[in-house]
Image (cartoon, rainbow, N blue to C red; front, side, top):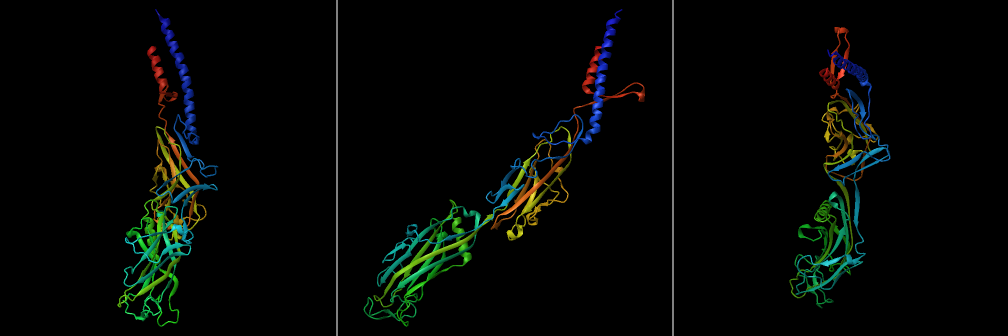
Length: 503
């Protein structure tokens, strides 16, 4: 009988089985240890933002998900900022252990003055399409723009005119600004002969004048006058974009009869400005018309004389000896336009929860905020819909109202009493990014910067990882309830079955 080989195989199986059972006891004890202590395990995301792998169900409780949450590091990293909408309306910065959102309000004054210091900056041009310039000369100098005209009946040049143009440059794009106030102050000066006929005169010519004889006045009702104009226009001086902002038409300049010598033959006064609202509108319009940069427009000065016919032909002489615009001062104030739907965010990309089977049990968020000016007063009640809000992976919470900027204080306050519950916003298998955003939901103008700040951002996540890699089989020993219960991992079972097959 060949009993010995068979016996050897049986002994070998028992030997291997005893070793495996010993190993299994160790595994069982380790499993019990892990299970009994799993509720005590706490972990943080490591520098590589990887979640530690577990071999049994493990709870991770209140894990801080952000770095540099109090902005105390020398740099802002790993926080970063992004802007949507008009990037010229907002600016991100950080200082004094806080992250800042700057809304870029601004108010400035533009003054166009001393415009005759460089006479060559002025260019004489023909605005009307046909030439009929003053016949006794015209020019520009440090004293202003000047012309002189002598008319005698029956010559045709009764309405000569002359214009000068001057380029005004803002030096930056004005499409982001609105002109809120404007004024024009220009001074005219003129000297005329007593033959210039105005209401109240009785003679058209005088014996000591060119006619050598007194002639009665049979003047047309318009009489003689000078027309001074100040206009603004686009760079092409197009008719549709040329606007009158000041003008004056003399009425009594030239009056001699009935007045003591020398009569009313000299004049200096302000050219009458148009309504301020109109001037503001015209300035905004001509800057908008500059499609290249919205920063240039044309200032135009004009002088025109008018000689009305006397009904007695060939006996009318009108001498406009010295006519000038001697000073111009255009001043306007503009404020920054803040565009609707502009947003600025401070964000941080945290780690991901990338287990096969996991449940997020809790996620909490809170932060502190403040503002350096009263939002409602600074925006003149025009931006009450603008807000501070948070997003996780681009999604806002629908469970909580946003924070209106009008409610912010000038000292740090918590965003909410307690915490925001954001459990339903936490994604799996992708990086978790928190964004805290200032969202400007209104169009308005702003005359000064406003700074909104955040600090002490608290963002914690709790989750349970369910073990999917270990299969447990309960093997009961003989003796019913008195038998020993073992925990065996699936690879051990396969090995035992293989040994049984050999046996």
